[in-house]
Length: 77
Image: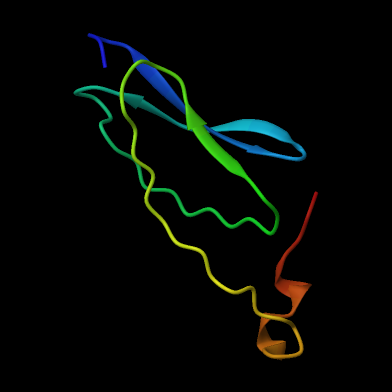
């Protein structure tokens, strides 16, 4: 990362691309985000430096398996 270069962290899905964070050396060297995707996605960044993403994949629980995870707790605008 050069001087005061800002690096934009992005995620791309079939719906489009959004910025999920901005890194700036010495000011914001790392960020913590929790992301949940149901479909395929691509993580990327701008800038000339290396950026490391860390996370995991898990099996999506079916409503029949865990009725307490019913979608009534999720609201969409």
